[in-house]
Amino acid sequence: MLVAYSLISQRRIRHWAVYFLIPVAALAAYQWATYVLYRRSQLSAAMSWTVASKTFSGFSFAAGGLTALAFTGGCLAVAVFLAPLVWRPRVLLGFAVGVVPIAAALFIEGTLLKRFDFLHGASRVFLEAQVVFWAIGGVSILGLAVADAWHRRDPKSYLLASWVCGTFLFAAFVNWTVNGRSIVPMAPAVGILLARRLERGASTGNKSRQKAVLICFMVGAALAILVARADFLFATAVRQSAELTYAKYGRGPQALWFEGHWGFQYYLEKLGAKAVAAKQSVPKQGDFLAIPLNNYNIYLPDETWTHLLEVLVINGPCWLTTANGEVGAGFHASVFGPLPFACGVVPPERVLVYAIGSMPPTPRAADP
Image 1 (cartoon, rainbow, N blue to C red):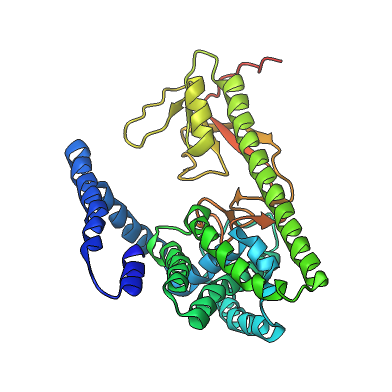
Image 2 (spheres, rainbow, N blue to C red; image 1 turned 180 degrees about the horizontal axis):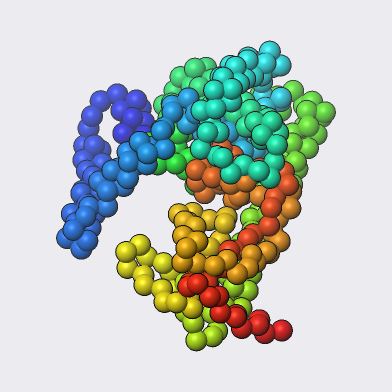
């Protein structure tokens, strides 16, 4: 991006081009160093993982693009709320006309939601409506970058356009999954584009317009606080579920094993439980196995050698969440859902606890 900006602004290659060899050398050094340490170069391994992941999941450019648009709109919601002030109604209608038929086709065909059979907590129609709304907002955001470059046609506008569009293309088609962390880097550029666009109306001194801008920012701030609170409640519920699991099943002579990652893994390993590793872990009869349902890379055990003892339930966020596959929220990875956050009836965090062996031992009661 900086190379393109330099070429556009300087018109020809000069001594400044030598400085761009520094990051190239750093990446090459990282590639070599990780191979020496791990016998596997991390940059090429990441690219291989991306290809394998997209192949395994049956990647679709249309579904990936729509998901990335929904993430763009949701992660930069204040820009979506300001869309009626920066676009004429007929332009917004054009954005909707462009998104709705494609989204409807993907919904009818089942391409977008075919990997989300675990969607139970919210109506699919309600989820699809959220996807369409935020996707239209995502088109509006990309339109800001394209329109600014078209009208100004200077190096700075081209830099902003490549910043926004390049980030979108990476998140949608290059990264192994769409996630909020891949979309948020375009936020500074979008903020500059919004300021440029709003300056046109500010010069007229229209007080009603100024109030409308303030209201849009307040709505965006309120949504940000609600989403942050929902994420906090989710993290708290995960910690409490891990602590409750260990309190009931991890303090006796039997070992406590668990599946899953993220916060559940962090807290249980900190307390002393053991993570299940394929072809390496050897649980003994009488041990316990905990599996959090709202997690990644989990596999239910064979019922011939396990016995379900209990389903531990911890309440988390109720109507809004950032990470729950049953309502289509997957801020950290779109494999859980096509939205960075989703509204709906959010189920509680649940942990399945199994006993290894034919006769389940009695767990120790949790301390009061």
